[in-house]
Length: 314
Image 1 (cartoon, rainbow, N blue to C red):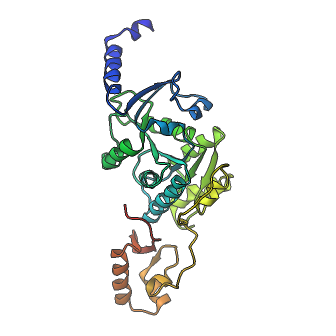
Image 2: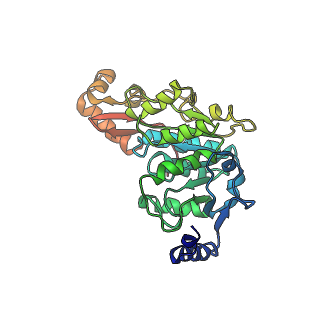
C-alpha cells in the first residue's frame, strides 16, 4: 500500500490536483475542511475528496435534487425548468447531474433564481460530459458550482454515473423526479434519497407516456405527488413559494381560441382533432404548424401532437 502511494503515478496525480486547485475558483475539499458539505457527512459513504469549481459556498445552503429522463419531452423539460426556478427563488439550491433532458432543464431553472445550482459530475471535473452541455457547464462554473469526487482526467464510464447519484441525493433535503421511464437512472437517485432519509417527490404525467411510468411507480411506493413548487416546499420546513408560476396547475385565464382549446394535455393525432374541432385535415395541419412554430405545440413520434404550457425561453 505504501509503495503504491509513493508511486510516480500518484505523485503526478497529486501535482496535477495541486496545480488545478491553484487556479481561481478551483477547490479541492477534504473531509477535514470547513467547506466540506455537512449533508454528505450524513450518508454512509461520503467521498474523502471533492473537486469543486465555482461558488463553493453553495455547498452550505439547503438544496433539492431535481432529476429525470435524458430523453425528456419538451413539456417535461419546461416543467423541470419552471419548477427548478420556483424552488431556486424560494431559496433552495438545485442539484442535478448535468445530463441532457431534465437535468439540463433543472440547472437552467436553478440559474434563474438566487438559489442557483450544483452540477454533480460522473467524470473528472476537468471533463465536460456530454459535450452538448458545454456552454451550460461553463455558465454553472461561473454562476453556480461544478462538483466531482473523481480524480482529474477521469473519462465518462458507465459505473461512475450511478455512483455519483448518491451525492446528488445526499447533498439535498429531497429528490424530485420530473419524468422517468421504469428503467431510468433517475430512479437510482430516488432510491438513494429514500435510503438516506431524504424526501422523495415525483411529478405525474399522462398514463399513455412511458416517461411517466417511473414517476407513477414512485408515487405508488410512497413518493409525494407534486404538481407545483408549493407541494415541495410544504414538505420542507422553513421554505415558502412566492412569486412564481405553477408548473401544471393552470391559473385562471380567458378560454383559448382555436385548435388549442380542443387539444387537452395528452398526445393526440390529427384525426381526433378533426373530430373534436369540426375541421378538415388540411385546416388542422395548417393550424398545428402555426402552433408548433409559436412554441405552443410539440410534434411527437407516430403522428401525435401535444400541447405545451408556456415556459421561459432558454
